[in-house]
Figure (cartoon, one colour):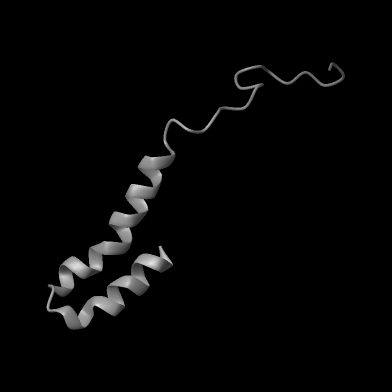
Amino acid sequence: FGLGNGLAVRMQDTGISPYLLGTIPYILTLIALVGLVGRTTPPAADGIPYEPGTE
């Protein structure tokens, strides 16, 4: 998010609308999240109830 914010600040002198520049951090965050979907694996014990004393 910080990278997108810094990029938006740097691009202020280009003549691009400040409203559009304000969305850059959010757009980059969404792109990063979309890139991670499907590449993560759930925990091995997902959905298995915990029973103390058993292993």
